[in-house]
Structures are given as structure tokens and as C-alpha cells.
Image (cartoon, rainbow, N blue to C red):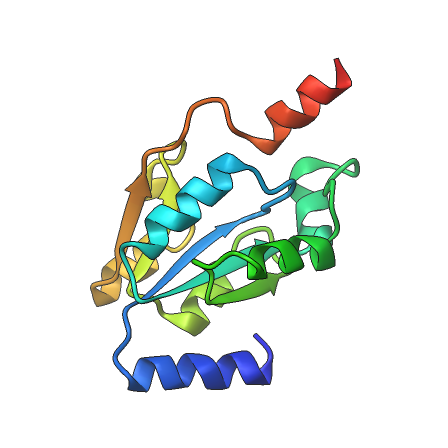
Length: 150
């Protein structure tokens, strides 16, 4: 997190806002992403999106990704009304950033099992909650890219 983001986060914590995080690559922003973000925002006061850096995505998904670079993905996410902050991370999981933020909620789509989510054990220790949001079927960046290739 950069200094202005850290200052904003501290103001939110002092103001006793409920803070939620949602993480992902957010490559090729699509309806599934927007649905998840909107549902997450409805459950919290401030929503922070944790977004994988380009190098992080390459480590996870291979050299053909990301489809759009970090700057483009960040700009698109910042335009969404439900998003209060976007923070990028270089690791393959957002655990270090989650530990810095110490959110009240961590949101993921229903394609994940709670116990397998990065940050689950950390949030459980201090009373934070992992919230699974039912995913819209057939919306994933990989499926969109695969349809374009065919």
C-alpha cells in the first residue's frame, strides 16, 4: 500500500467503518466481477480490491496473461462506484496485504472453499469473516478468452 492509501485506511478504521476486501486478477473486467464487487459492497462500508500485479498473474496463470496490464485493470476498477480503493500486490496470494489491512470481511466467489481462501485463518483469529458470494455461472476471464480464440 502506498502512503495516501495507508492514511485513508487509518481514517476509515478511526471512523469505525466496516472494511471489506476482495481479491483477484480482475483481468478483462466482466459481469461476474462486477456482480461480486457489487454484492461485496452491499455488505460493508468500505470495499478494497486487492489486485494481482502483472508479474503475480504470470506466476499463477502463465506468460500469456494478464490480458490487460495493471494500469488498465486498476483504472477500470477505480471507475466502479462500489470500489473505495484498489491495492496491488506482487505475491501469488494477498495474505501479506490482508494482514496489513486487517479487514472485517474478506469476500470471494463461490468457486472457492472458505478454508482454502488466503487469509481465512488470519481473519478467523481476530473475529473477521470470510463471506462467500454465489458466483454467476459461466463468467470467468479464462472462459471469455477461450471463446475468443475458438
